[in-house]
Amino acid sequence: MTIRLPFRRFLFGTIYTSILVLFFSVTVFSQTTDPLPSWNTGPEKQAIVDFVHATTDSASPQFVPIAERIATFDQDGTLWVEQPLATQGFYCLSRVPALVAAKPELKDVEPFKTVLSGDRAAIAKLPMQDLEKLLMATLSGMTTDQFRSDVKTWLASARDPRWKRPYTELTYQPMQEVIRYLRDNGFKTYIVTGGGQDFVRVFSEQTYGIPPEQVVGSMGGVTYSHDANGKPVLIKEPKLVLNDNLAGKVEGIHMVIGRRPVAAFGNTPGDQQMLEYTKGGDGARLAMLVLHDDAEREYAYGPALGLPDVKMGTFPQAYYEMAIKNGWTVISMKKDWNRVFAFEK
Image (cartoon, rainbow, N blue to C red; front, side, top):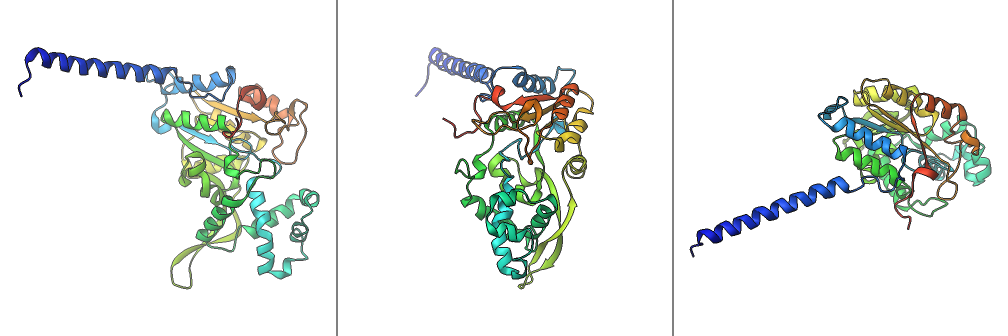
């Protein structure tokens, strides 16, 4: 069949017009859709948007090439709940019965004796030295493959004592939006945590969209060996190679990432050096701290601004004042977030 010229012009013109309308609609939609819907309008939200615009607009004097768009996030208390104990702490406590069954001589040795008693008040009072001993004992002695399998199995069944939900659901929706917003604009996002690197790598990709190779954490030693069938394996050893906290976070960033971040997010003095290092670079920089001041939707602790003091995740008043002085943005969970968790109605 031959299509007459006027009809062909009409047909192609209609298709062309439809394409233009579709393109215009998509463009307008992308420009008007809020990338941070769980954030209330205010200077904190605007600081994120302004930073992204300034660093991704090629005409901006603060433009950052894609290769240099590095953003780092602390995890506990910054991306997910850390009270009343960091998730890895709950995992380690759950491992004690099996550890003592394999090594009965530990039954009457502290801190294993206290953990086996089930006395939560006594467990909460264990000194840091005992907690470190507990971590070393429960996070070593197995292959890295077995460790990943054990953590994955535990995460599938373990539930937070307050919300009765999997720990991987207790991530802050506003921070998840920041991660996606940055990635959508060419940023590479990393977790830089004081928690165990191997532990976080098990769930980071599924939970945050951050692959294992973009997790920088406290590193335990490993030894190359072979199993009974001659298969090459790595054995987790009870030694600390890098404590990825305080200045250790910057050292870990250098060793694993190899670039200075242009954006960094944290919530405690353990993140201070990471934020200082980030802000110490040239050009546009973003440094933000999460302040937990919402006892109803999550937890409230400081002791900055008169909030309750805690053992885990403390945010001192002096730290708050230093952050303001240094131009770091302090995020109020209560004021700046209209939604904390994705499962909220």
